[in-house]
Image 1 (tube, rainbow, N blue to C red):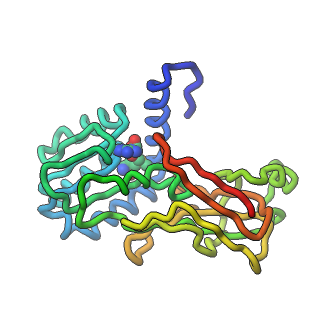
Image 2: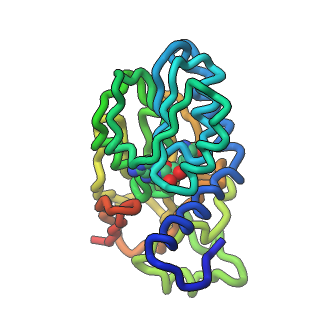
Image 3: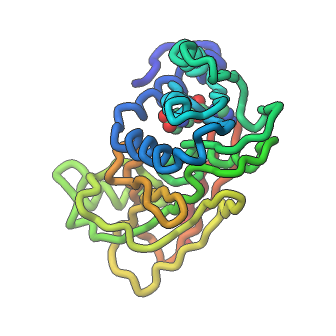
Length: 267
Ligand SMILES: C[S@@+](CC[C@H](N)C(=O)[O-])C[C@H]1O[C@@H](n2cnc3c(N)ncnc32)[C@H](O)[C@@H]1O
């Protein structure tokens, strides 16, 4: 979904984000995996003060109410999503909808549980960095860990009549999401990790000794050791592809006002 006409910059940004974020709800595997994660922590949520950080349409806030939360702050920066969530959640007196970037939010009581889904296909390329700037300290963060994994294959094995090896070679230096279907290609090695309280944001990855001329990257989301969901199985996070142009690459993320800039180079 693309907006095709000229609009004032702020109007465009808010509507563009609205259209980008509602498309995540096409991915029911992702949403169900998160709802399972919440249910697995029902004992921590019952009676608790919870924050749904970047609540979108507010489904996780609603789930936490149903699991017995005493209060849920549904915090959303986008004005359109905030309005839609506030409308949906109006039936629940336990929910307070907050239209604010979550890093500016200062609750008047201590927070027990925070749920968030700020991950991009490259882990840090959306808004996960905002969790480093919170003005409150939740006791439990769901989920608490994610890993960007890598793998190598051969262009000849995945190329089709349109995206031929010759086309792929032209993409040197570009990270392209959704270029091919993930098929059964396994995620083989860790590239960069995020854990609650431990952001990395820059990695150098050494591919020496590994075979393949096409690199792919895919996200895995964990809580502790439990895999919650992953790229390839959730359409919200496609694999990201690039032709191999060396044995080492550097990946670096610079937080920006909307998401984070991604810098990628072969060394
Ligand atoms: C990937 S969506 C997830 C929505 C919802 N939590 C879910 O998983 O169904 C991320 C949401 O976070 C919101 N968001 C992004 N940065 C934010 C910030 N700094 N503070 C509050 N909301 C933010 C976006 O507008 C979007 O609604």
